[in-house]
Structures are given as C-alpha cells and as structure tokens.
Length: 310
Image (cartoon, rainbow, N blue to C red; front, side):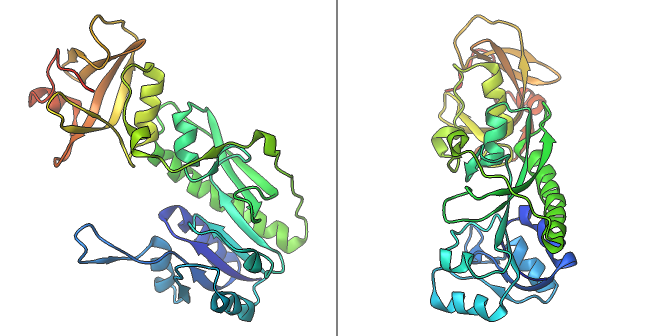
C-alpha cells in the first residue's frame, strides 16, 4: 500500500514509524523549519528529522492549496494519506486523490474536543478518560467518520506531558489496527453526532493565568493541564511572573484572602488560599530563572507567608 504521511511534532513520530514499517511510504509533508529563540539556528520538526534519517522525500509547503502540490500527490498516486498533528488544513482536491482516502489520528474521543487543544482540554476539564480517534478527513474540521477509538484513563497526577506521551503511543496502536482493516477491506465507520461536538481553541495567555478565587480542583487541573506548555502562571506583589508547574490540593480551610500565601509547609512548599482550600506550590519558575522545587522557594525566601499572588 503506497502512502504519504503528513505531520510535524513529536506526537506524530510513533504513528509515522507505524506507517513506515507497515506500508510503502513515498513522501512526507511537514511544516516549515523554525529558527530558535536567538534566530541563529534552524530547527527541524521531529517528523522532518525522521524523514532525513530514513532517506524519505520531504516537502514543506507554506500552503497545500497549490497546483504543484496537488500534481505531486497525483503523480505518486497514493493508496492512503495519513495525517497526524500536521497543523495545516487539507483542501478537497487533495482529499479526493487517495484510493482509500485520508485518515487522521486525533487525540480525543470524537466528537468531544474537536480542534487545537484536545489533550489540554481533557485535563483542564477534570475528565477521567480520554483517548484517540482514527477518522477520515473531510473538509469540516475533525468532523469525519470515525473508524475506531482507543481509550485511556486519565490519572489524578497526569499532566499534559504524561498524557501526551500515552496518547502518542495509543495513536500508533490504533493506526496499526486501522491499516490492517483498510488492507483487509474490513473498515466500518461511525458518523459523529455533531450535536455533541465540543470545539477547543489554542490555549490563550489569558486562559493560562491562574484565578486564585477558583476551586482547588480547577486550579490543580489548570496547573497539570498546562504542564509543560504553556504553563499556568501568576504574579507576585513585585509583578514578577511565576510559572507554576506542579501543585498539590489541600482540604484545609484558611482565613485570609484568595491568592494569599497562608501557610509554609517545610518539606513541600508555600500554600496559596483558594475558594475551598489551598494549593501547595511544589514546582515553580520565576521569570529568567530555572524551575525550582517548593522547598527551594521557601529556603530562598522568595515567597513568604502573608504575600499575595495575583
């Protein structure tokens, strides 16, 4: 089975390896190269690096709606195109080319969490379960028929990072099953119920700011749902930006104002008052500094009891 793969980040690599191992992979599409923060080094996407390492032809177009791109795909005449976190909309003229269509590995249990931030959203909303959906691509975003789903429990201590790593492997598992179904002609699909669809946008700067008037559950979910990127943040009274990477819920009810550091727990970190308890700051990063454990923040007297976070 001749295939083309479209993808960009680390999440796509296990699925790309599956396509490479199980099909005749002819071409890889990935997003354009970036420069690092200082602008003096070009950074390849993980998918591009895989292509280079395995001598697979790579294309990095700015846009797919281009006659030359369409013609290139027609020349290859792929049986299937596989898309995993590519980051570009695929036009209908390309969707119509492959014999078996275009399939996508999406990191949620569709129709829930269509869009850009499904893994973040599952943790932010306190979900206990998520998974991946292998689906056909159509013109409407993440709305195609679903071939199969793989399910994954969300643990209380899962972060965006740990759940991302679980789902990228689960996606490859589901993709391998799907490739076999396609080859054997045994694909059965399920239409999505559009009335149950939830659309999630990229995480905004405003969304990442911690609201200390919120419940301990919601604040805790925000901290872990945005770790490692973009990271939940707050400000101290000196207007210093503090990113919070890890925290713990505490049931104790405190006097004082929301956002106030109301207790210091010596072997853990400072406790911030929230609506129905407290949050222990166990891993934070001050602007321009390295990530620190809560105990180091206490020992360095960087956050003191009575201080307020805003």
